Image 1 (tube, rainbow, N blue to C red):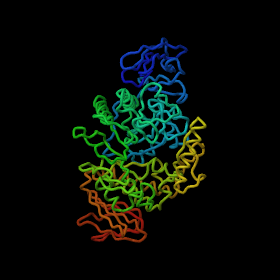
Image 2: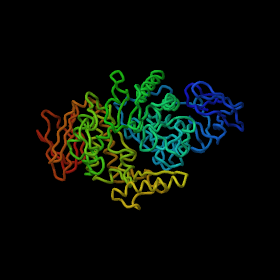
Image 3: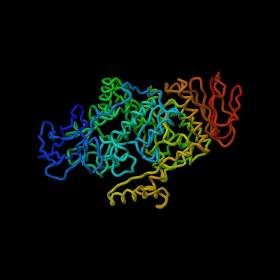
Image 4: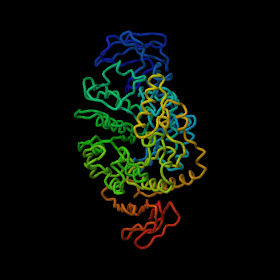
Length: 587
C-alpha cells in the first residue's frame, strides 16, 4: 500500500504509481490480486481479509515481487516485503506540542547508530536528559530512512518513507519524538531527496523517477522537471509531509539542495516550502525547513513573495570553513579559499564569505551577497557529520587543535548571530572518531565502496592502510560515543565550557539572531586577535601564541562574564588575554 500518500491510508487498500507497466498485482497474506489502472498511471486494488500490519509487495508485468516505493516499513530490510503501518494507533502524550522558534534554537546533530552503544531510537531516549541539561533545544537526526544493511550514515537510503528497521522502525521513532517533546526538545530530521544509491533502489522499475538530463556525484539526477515529473515531485513532497504529520517531526534539513537540478518556473524547493507552510497552518504547528547548499545563494531563504523559495535557514559552510582554517591552519581542498581572520569576521558580518567574490578553489566568482538577512537565516557550526566524517580517519576538531583554540571556536559559534549547531560528542571533546561506515550486503558493491574510499584519500598523501575500511564492523564500532568520558578531564572541562556558553546564549536575547549588517567586528591579522560586539557583550579572542591586548570599543562593558582562562585583565581601553584564549565581557 502506498501508505505514505496523504488521505489514502487504510488497512486493505493498496495503490502504486507505475505509468509504464502493462499489468500490476499486489501480493500479500498469501494472495496475489490484480490491480486496476486509473488516471495518471496509478494502480489500485484491495486485499481481502488483510491484517492491519500485513506484509505486501507489488508485481510488475509478471516480474519478481518488489517493495512499495512508498513503503512505510521494511522490517526485513531494503529487499524484503513492505509492511502496513497504522499511524493512528500510536498514542502521543503531548497533543499540543509546539517547537521553540528557530531563532532561539541550539541544535544538536546526532547519528542514531553511534550515539549510544545500542544504536537504536529507544536507546537514544536514555540520553535526552543530558541534552536538556546542556541547554539543547532542537535534536537533529541524521537520515533514518531505510538503507542497505545495518550500518550506515543514512545518506544512501532507498525506502524514503520507512524508518530504518535496525534503529527500531516506525513505532520506536515515534517513541523517541514523543520523549523529546515531553522534555521540551524539538526534533529535526535530515532527508535526502537529491539521489538514491543503487542497492535496494527499485524506483526506476516503477516509473521515471530519474533522468539522464543531469548528473550528480552519485549518478542520475532525480527527475524534477522532465516528463512525468509531477508525480516524482508529489512523491518527495508527500514524504516530507509524512514525517511532519505522522511522526510529528518539527522540521527537516534537506541534504545538498545544489544537486536538485530543476529549471521549473516553480522550483521543487519552493513548492515544498509552500506545502509545508500549508500543513503547519492546518496543524497549528511551527514547521521549519533548513537546506544544505554550496551555492551561497540567499534566494533559498528569501520570502516567496520576493522571488525566494521561502525556506527557513541555510547551513553556513563558509562560516565553518573560515573558522576551521583559522583554528587548524589547514589549507587543502576548499580550505585554500580561507585562512584569514578577516574571513571569520566577514562571515559573522555578512553570512557568506563568498558573496560574488573570486574563489581560488573554484577558479571563478562564487555566491551572492546575503544583503538584508538576519543571522537566524543561517545555521553555524564548528563541526558536523561531513566535516568530521569525511576526513580520512574521522578526527574531531578536539583531536586537531589545542583545548584553548577549541574553546575559542565554541565561543564564536555559540555567541554568533547564527543558529548554533553541535555535532554529537562535540560538547565534551569526544575522543572517539566519527568515520565513514557502510554495510553493503553485495560483496562486489562493498568492495568497490571500500576501494573507492581509500583511493580518494591516497591522492592526498594517505596510505591505503591508513584509511579505515568502511565495510569493516570495527570502523562502525570505533565511531560509537564513549559516554564514560564525560566525568574525566579534559572532557569534563570542555563540557562545562559548552554548558556555560549555551546557558549564556539562551539567557540573553541579544545573543540570538539579529541583523548581520549591524554586527561590529574588528581583527588584526598580524597580532591574531578578533573582537566581536554583540549587543551588551564583547567577545575578545586571542589566537596567537603570545599574550595580546585586544582594544575595546568606546563605552563597552568591562565586566568579565565568561573566560576560557582565569587571568583576564580589563583596562579602560583594552582587555589583556593569555595565548589561545577567549573572554566574553558584558554587563
